Image (cartoon, rainbow, N blue to C red; front, side):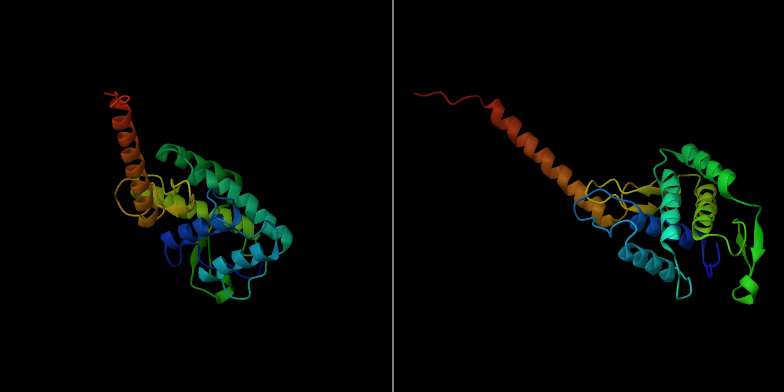
Length: 210
């Protein structure tokens, strides 16, 4: 591993969003349109690197095949935070992951390559998976404490299932985007209208011949 940017340097939300974006690449999702590169393939590695660079990692990012598999395992553990049913379950999951993987908080500037920022991995040369899991847990934990609500979720649309980050002070979201929410509301309305029409048709009974 050559470099890792600030855990909370740009914002807590950015670090949490990076986690959601990596989960979307590394883990399977529901829906026929959710095609992704084959696990362990060059395409998957390229997609992971693209996410990391989009979130500030300096190019070129180098990830070995073994490192890619370790990132996938970290993503599987982190997904439990996104699927937690309530805030207490999310807090328990984050606490468990931090207890298992995190080290005492430390400040680092990566030898002057960045501003001072907080890490809870073992060192500046920690594996990608350790950095990803610990930094994501810390960011999601800060969001949970700030909102007193689950910090993240999985889109409830059967055709999506994308991980997303909860922001703002409102109730927890069910969908990753307004488009998914609208699509599911329209589908539910059409299904209800179909059931009503079928019920009315059945209520008329068979036609009586004269």
